[in-house]
Length: 209
Image (cartoon, rainbow, N blue to C red; front, side, top):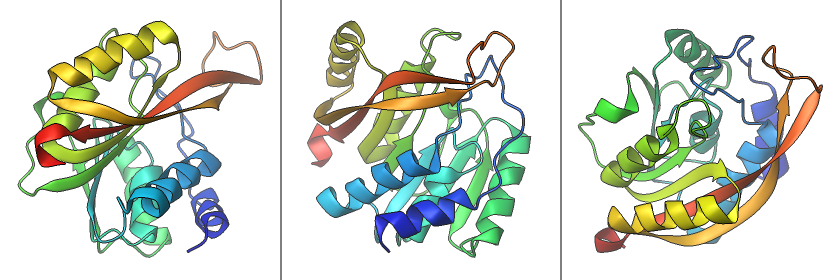
């Protein structure tokens, strides 16, 4: 599948019509999800024939995209039941519901019965809920060999996260910065669209490299 074909497929998904401020839900655009997943596969072979987990999957865009790129099994996890309902509907719509499992639960207390090769996640940025991004990272590093995780850009945050990742027995092998568009989702949003600088981390667990 070409990257553009993947993007078109993801654009056909039904997105959530309400988002939670406390959970810091910001929908990942199809163009960004397609680019992240396609690069993960083309550059590192981290998707096709792998078991992939989407932590905080929301409407399932990363999980579904991984399935469309040929992941052998995909697991999407979210704490919100309405998000998982949208995920289930989208997986049926795109014909990949036979290889995707949806789990309702908190990532902090997650227990999985199968090994995970790759985690792809757009976690809370930790602005409204301090430390939420780090909780997602801790879980991701504990269950997977390779992690793709999106976080607020900035020198201070990069230094902090890199140190925490090292403490958890992993290391950053690639970092890419891009602009993430956030629409007018909440009352305090004044602009129709706000662009936020975001870092995409590729993280490898050292002893499992």
